[in-house]
Amino acid sequence: MTEVASPLTGVRVIESSLLGPAAVTTHLADMGAEVIKVESPAGDYVREMTWPIIQGVSLLHLHINRGKQSLTLDLKQPEAVEVYKDLAKDADVVVEAMRPGSLARRGLGYEELSRSNPRLVFCNVSGYGMTGPYQSLPAHGIAFDTWAGIVNPASDEDGFCYIPEHASIGMHAGPLFGALGILAGIIRARETGRGCFLEIGQSDAAAYMDWYRSESWLAYERPENEVTGNKADGYARRAPGTAGMKEGVRYQIYESSDGHVLFMASEQAFWKNFCACVGRTDLFERWPGSKYADHARGNRELQRELREIFKTRSSAEWIRLGDDKNFPIAPVNSPKTIADDPQFRDRFPLYPHEKHGADMLPFPVKFPGESLPVPTRAPTVGEHSEAVLADVLGYDADRIARLRSAGALG
Image 1: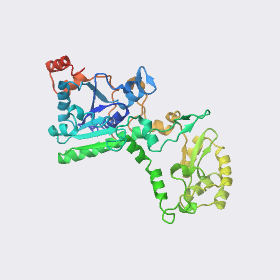
Image 2: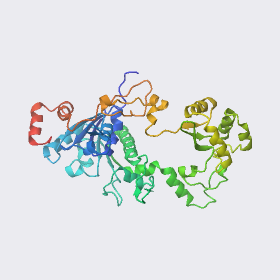
Image 3: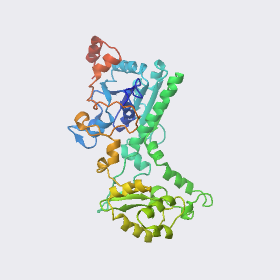
Image 4: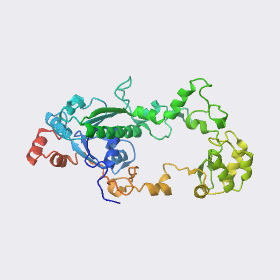
């Protein structure tokens, strides 16, 4: 790998956060930004939230606060507020990853900070955003997925509702969109000298990530002579999103000899390749299908044939055949098994728990020929307080001692 500066070297971010929204700056730190997490003397209680707890510290903290420095400031003290302002004067970004207005109540909102730093990008990441009837409603990450219609309630054998297993969307997508907006703000600020204020609700992000289903339902509200299904289905409307996949046959999950695979020969050319590969050209002759997007929906006779065919080989064998004979097929992994997948091992060399506290996935964007910085372990509360004050702000030992004596550092 060529030793060049990381993509965000020279970008300084001041972060005030609680819990999962702090992930907005994790992406920036992973690409080389300097992220200073300003915490209350008690610290962000993310270190105790969720599971697993690894040697007394939560995986959530170890992952989302990796690569950051921790500075404790008691913002109830005027001396601490002045330190925060000093940090913001030369920063590119201030992130308020908590309820909107938390910093403004301390005299550290965008309007105040931008007076001394007009190019400052200020980003708030919150649960439901800064407007609307839910803006002050307390919530945790799953709330944004239930709000967005991503999680369907389930019932156990005793008739009690429960939260089913699902991929968390809002708590991850909100910070991701926030980081994208921050980068756009930095680019404009460096070109024009003018910063900006931006905000993102994690609920908004969850809904946006599921736009295909919600926009399909909106489309289906229009007359059927305007909005139909696709040609291969005789233009009949299917249920939106993956709900419309249940009756698929050429696009479906099948059991292999040792697990499952996802078969995706919805294009006629791929279907023909598959039939030739398994020596069943008769299946193509009988059911050639349409050129595109034909799932052979509801064809139980064909589905039975395919069910028996897929049982004859292992998942790995089917993947190799798909690669060799050119038909789409994919492994069916679980969160527990994916780390053993050869593609995963090639693309995600894990950060080891010996150095980082937990085995963690690296940032997924790659810069061929370059290497991104390996993040430092997530900090303990106030671990870098004196280093930040001395190295970033240039405070001497006497001034740091006075701040500590005044209670500014907790």
